Length: 306
Image (tube, rainbow, N blue to C red; front, side, top):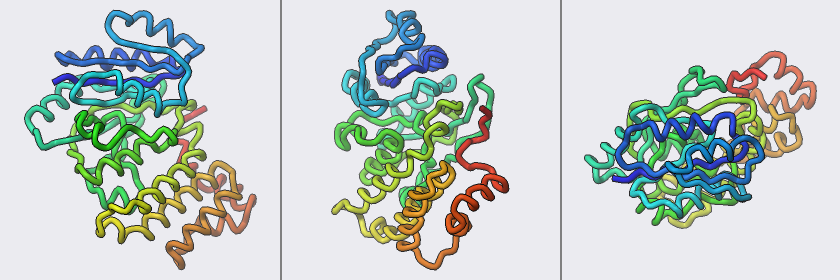
């Protein structure tokens, strides 16, 4: 069973060799690796040249990571699809574990495993907060407990659900899990499959404030679907309130008090009379932000040092 991996890339020459090696060293008998580079200007192309006989790669400007993954998937021929960002890695034996699961469990349409956080020097930082699959929990808490580099899907799932939403650049993975999960439940493999690298240039750290609008748009779009089952539709107020609250919190810690206040008001409208410490900080304005930064750790810096 062929597994096709796409690596979307842009100016990650510092890490991409480790990413490629983590795939090619798997020892899996039938793996296809495609690197879609967005026109890097660092050492990325020199690294890719070293692998020209073992992988397919292309370097041309694109609309970002999401489009790169979609374009790469279109070029692949494997029955199983995945993507690994150019600063993340697969753990040894991951593809054998994935391939065996799909081979022996024909009812599994997509799966995910555990994931570790590593730093710029490959040092272990912590464990991604993975948990067994529960679609209602995913919707209710707007908590993406499914780590993207450890996700693999049968091609038929992608064919039926469509590609990633190219209007999204930060939460395209969560949107996809929500979309695919409406038809196919994921299978959880309780074993480490990948590592997600935390460093100061990673989007999850450098641009956490930009996630907020996409998160809200994704949850609003979910509840605008006419085909939602009733057990999911009844979570609307809870889920939207949670999404708006998270958006408010992200903007607050990013220093955007105006948008933080607007999202906090929307959260209150969905779930009134739920007091939050964030609301008090927002009422205090810049003073509240100053107090918060002095008394609390920024929850979005992931423990990284500059």
